Length: 342
Image (cartoon, rainbow, N blue to C red):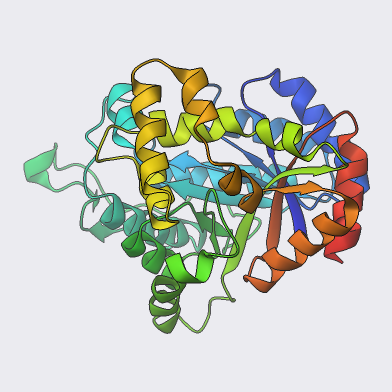
């Protein structure tokens, strides 16, 4: 099992990237760079490529609505070139609030778009003449444009013609599509004790249709990491993030993270977090995050306990353990969990 970590996007990106680059010596295998409505991810990924030599550098995630499929493919190919073949293209649909509020693009047909983006990216990297007749019309027909567009293929030669594509998905249809077509899966708030109940059928259905030329699906999941005795205090550090996603990352009825907590059995708690957060009572929303959820979605405790948690994620099918180290010595945490994973 490999070890990954997300780069914090609310801090100085150079300082954060320098810190993560140092963790490469401690065994870190993958770094994920987020893109919400802060700095763009590819700029920081390029900086990381210059600062590192071994670890993979992934976007988590690039929204499929903010760039054309061809540009997503070009960006991934460029990052793969400057990193020497270490890029991962992490994709996701994001949500209506960000896509329509920040990008000004209608949030429509997310599954169909994701499926076509995956296919178009792979066409581009194989340097095939690019055509598509679906949500994305390539070339654009005369009735929808000037009629002067023509099929093209990538001018440059990619380092790899099969850059890994990972998809962030939570709902059953999206998870089925991910298991069928993607190289990896990026779930969020992953509880290894409930993963099979929540996603097992969708993953099995997708894998049953998976092309034979694709390697087994990588599963990227984990949570906050801290090895030490202050269990409650350190777990509480995850409350603001969970409250933000469950309460604020989507309107009522269109919040995927709220829905996930309900599937975990925290229906009342999810409703309360959302109501408090949307009412502007953030501290109360954070306090309403169940202690049981904090425990089940983290790796925080004495060394023997964290070792058991690592095994629990492995047993649940996780192949890349994605951890956020807490406390004053993240390098020690990374090195320790790397040894446990091996």
